[in-house]
Image (cartoon, rainbow, N blue to C red; front, side, top):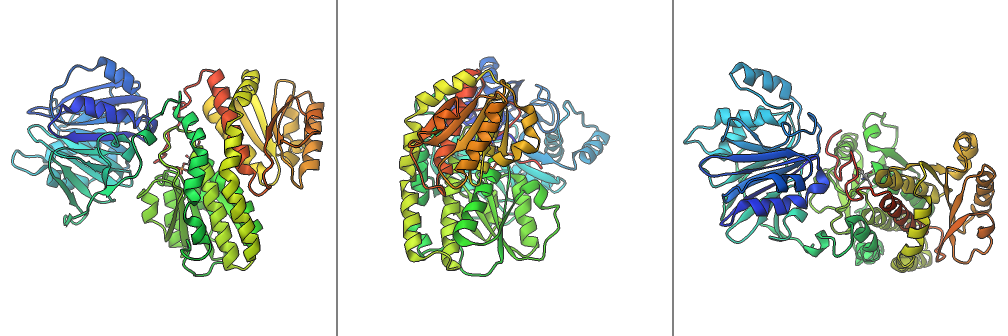
Length: 599
Ligand code: AGP
């Protein structure tokens, strides 16, 4: 995954492009580059983060430009492989997010025509393709369209050419938006990059090629017909996309969770009460949830919630596995969960579900993202922009969406009485308060995390709904603190992993007050017997737990169906403070990116 931006206007492009690019750094940060247009195109690029680019680049005058921040997929993260690429010195420059799958074949053919290549990347061939097609009197947008006919794969491209006050761009399965300003226009991979400059956004669709000049926007569909599409006003503010005084986006996003949860069910309670349902009738015999990473863990919690409230059988599958599995003889509602809406594995799964004739519903955070065009129904989680690579507020709002969906399915299937539904809705409304209570304990959690931050391995255990929460706690911990975290159903420890426990292996145990409480106490006793320190997450009124645990994070008691929400918030803070104590780059952990657009 990479981030691209483009600008055409009356102002100097270089500082604007760098400013916008910095907001896309979550999409990749191993190398970066910029191209500024004029009679000739000047490029500067370097290995490393955008700060390295900014520190080293010369002043590059000009009012047209493109820039790129890279997360290497094809070719190593070096200066040579950084974007933009040029067909020839000072000529056409191209930035790209995606993968050109037939690039070897194109490269051989272009090399045969005398083109020389300086990098290992797929993108460079596109610069040469455009260069080869572009004549002095030809139209850049048309030229890009011709060049694209030879390209197979996924892309968001942006192109500048000498002597042309325009940026041309194209999209196929990689995100691209146009920002419409006053006497200036922008392009970016993501709305958040542009919010400082404009909130009027046009979402570019797959197959479209676009041109921005300082005072016009042209969109062509795949057949070359002009498309008229008015900009949408985006409600997200710049402040939403900035750190707002927190040291990291992740911490800011953790603290935004009470508001995010509130926003995610605002106005929706009516929907589940039948006025505006997510699904408009239709029948299905089961639910299949398909997702990756944190969204998959949300799906695992969703299984318990839907089975409990709606008594519909639910299976959960990792997206990259789903499409290769055989279609069983059933007619499931396929629920795809993805905060970004751009995860290629999950988009491929949505297509496969449609091919199998199943009804599809996406739970997604980003408005207008690719998956929304692949499915029959969409539930937006309304968490606002999430910049930290580690998913936090998008996870809890995915859970809210799953509660709402379960209530609707329970109502449709008549497994929920009106009274039960009222009580569940009431509990849902209390969630922001329970989460705020956890946030008020951030200092205690920080001190505890510091104590255990030297660990190399850590186990997370829970039962029932808290088992996927243990998995999510482990994922957060390994992702940002680089401590090896393992999430396990507590009952499974004795079937193998107990062999790994010792005084150096802290075990975080979720021991909230539900029907598994006694069993959890037995499990943590087994753990203590091996000398492992136990950190329990327990209810505030549990006076016994201290006999079994070395440290306890006490949480306000929440009905068991909803307690995954406050517990995961405690574990997010736990992972955050472990990472902070270890000096890790929390918002941009090594080797991973926020949106994964490769399979
Ligand atoms: C979460 O902290 C991770 N960064 C990652 O597992 C993520 O949840 C996964 O890549 C799926 O992303 P999506 O929700 O955008 O599809």
